[in-house]
Structures are given as C-alpha cells and as structure tokens.
View 1 (cartoon, rainbow, N blue to C red):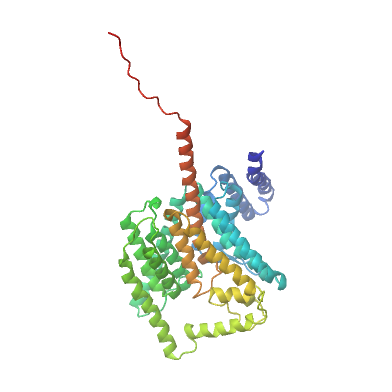
View 2 (view 1 turned 90 degrees about the vertical axis):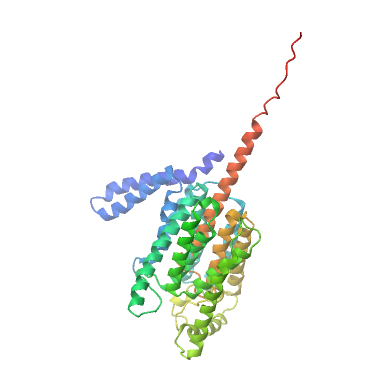
Amino acid sequence: MRSLVSDLPAAALLAAAAVLALVVGWIAPQQPILAVVVATAVLALGVSAVQRAVIPLFVLPLLYVAERLGHGAIDLSVSDLALTLGMLAAVCFAQRPLSPALRNLLWLVTVYQLATLFTVVANPYAANLLEWLHSGILIAGALMVGWAVGRDGLGRVGLLLMIATAVVLATWVIVVGAVHYLAGNFEPVYLPFRMHKNFLGTTLATSATIAYVRPDWLRLHPTLATACFWWIVLAIAMTQSRQAIVGLAVVLVVLVLRRRTDRRRSQVILLAVVPAVVVVLTLVRDQFASGNEHNSAYSRLTWFEEALEIWSTQPLVGVGLRWWYTDRFPGGFQPPNALLEVLTASGLAGLAGFLVLMIGSVLVLWRIPPEYGMLAGLVVLGRFVQGQLDIFWVAAQTSIPFVIAGICLGLHARDEDTTHTRDELRATIPDAPAPTTRVESL
C-alpha cells in the first residue's frame, strides 16, 4: 500500500503525458509551434520517469540566465521558469523520504510563508499574491531541485556544471572588461540580457565559493579549482559589485577561521580579503566625500529613509509584497537592503519570519557534517550578507545558494543510506567459524 501511495505522483504525471500526447496529435495541424512545446513537455515527462533527476540537472545552467520571457501580465525570467520546471519534476520524482535536515529547512520556509501571509490578506492585489508564491519557490523549490540532483548521485556533476557556467560568464565579463579598459572606460561591466553588475557579481561570488571550498566528493583537482576561483574573482572585481565582494570576503573569513571543518584551509587568503574590503570602504567613503547626491551611496540613504516612512504606515503587516510595482507610493524603488525590503513589504511579522528563515537555515546547515554542510552553510550565509547591501528577493541571486544547499543535503542523505546499507549487509553475514585443528591419533 505504501509503495502504491508513493507512486501516485509519478503515475499522475505519466497519465498527464498520455493526455498531452493526444493533444499534440490534435493541435499539430493547426498550431505547429504549440505542438512542439507540448511534445517537448511529453518528452521531458517520459525522460523523468526513467531518470528522476534529469530535468533538475538540466535546469542548473539556466538558473544563471536573467533574461525575461513574455509580455504584459506574463513576465518572468528564464531563471524562474527553469527553477519552476525543475521543482515540479523534483516534487513528483525525487527520492523519498526527505532527510531530517531538509525537512527542517522546509519548515523554516513554511514559517516565513505564514508570517508573510498576513500582508497578502491585508493588501489584496495580484502582485502581492504572485510574489508570495514566488518567494516560496525561490527557496523551497530551489532546495527540492538541489535535493533531487544530489539524492540521485549527480551532485558532483551538478556542481561542476554550475562552476563551468560561472567560468563562461566570468570569461565574458573579463573579455568585455578588457575591451572597455583598453578604451579608457573603467566603469562597472554590464552584459546583455539583463545581466547587470550586481547580478553578475553575486552569482559569480556564490559559484566562486564552490571552487574555493572544494569538498572532497567534488573530486576537483586543487590546481584547477584554484584557477577557476581566481578567474571568477577577477570577473567579480571587474563588475565592481560591492555586495558581492563583501559577501565573498565574509564567507572566506568564516571558512578559514572555523574549527569544525573537513580540512584546514590556509589563512593566506586573508591577505587578499583585507585589501578588497578596504577598497570597498574607500570607494564608499569617496562617494560620500564627493557631495554628489545622485551617486549610489547617497541614493541608498534616501531610499532607506523613504522605506522607513512607508513602513510606518503599516508597521505590523507591511504594505504588501512588490509594493514598488504599484502606484500606492511615489518613487517605485525596491529597498536595497534585505531587512528593509521585508520590513516595508510584510512588516514586523514578516521580518521575524525572515530572520527565523535565514538564521535557522544557517544553523541547520552548520550542524551537518562539514564535508557536506560547510559549503551549504557558507553559500546561504553569503547570500544573507549580500542582501544587506542590495535587494534580496530576486531570481537567481537567491535561488542558486539554496540549490547548492539542496545538492549537499541530497548527497549527505545518499551517502548515509549507502553506509547504513553496508552496515546492515555486514550484520547479516555470519562470521566465519574459527579454524579448528584436528589432532590425529598416533
């Protein structure tokens, strides 16, 4: 009976695939493009029935694509669409049961969702409800995508795929930056397809963390990992994303100073961290000293003041998620600070839920054996630090760290099951009898 219940999601999707196959045959003559889309969905469902993690694995590089699809009311990024498809496949096909650590993280997401539900009820408009669903997918959906990849034994492939994607992006940034520098332009590097400096900087910083932590199960040669790390760091420097630099600096400091670890790391990296932070502080100081009220430093102070004024209108439940896309308040800016962003949107109730979510997630991951939990905890911590200097709830920048955490949890659960099965097998095999010595009579 239990196996029948566990197979219901897969059976339902296979039935849906059969229905879609009939739809393809019916609409192909009239709508060939739509038929191709539906046929692709049928193929994806069929492949998932054979290899459960193929769709979650396939969407990992697409998480780095910020370009938006659709027009008008339907407008979402490629990253969000890929994450949603991967989440649906993971929920239906990923191995069960979920590990205790993953269940705890999902409960923390539930706490946050319940805390922000008050603002959805108090401020009824479409963008509010959509963003409430979106924030749940960004974290819970990302965890499930990562879990599906790691639990099926594809965690190493998944992380190597993410590093490779980051190296490609970093190379693009470096080439564009070099061209600009030769022309005498030393401004931050932006790429097409909505890849602005903060998107590039933060996603690259998260990927650089994978290369630097380099857990043993990743089986990435130290020389290659070091080369990937510094190549990505060079690209981060060219983006001039200050939140990315600060976030990565905090991660590296915590990594080298932590005592409970899978292996000791050299503290020489701190010689690079300190100057990087000093440069960031110097740039901020120069912006304030310039007296230019339109630079990013002064603009942030103005936004912080306006955000607090907006929050004061509804301090308990906030004015609604994505209120900056409505005409309820002038300006239309998204607060460039995670705490103020949550505070204005969902009030004190939402802020309490957000702190429970983020602090609780780091603590849960910190208790996992360091060969798995170290990387998972650091990427989530890095995202929390980044979010204090820029917007937090945004597509890939938030989902990628939690995908990595899910991969680590999936691999941990898989290795624990393997060890448990091996121990059980040894217990069932009786010990070989001790050899007896036969004494022949003379």
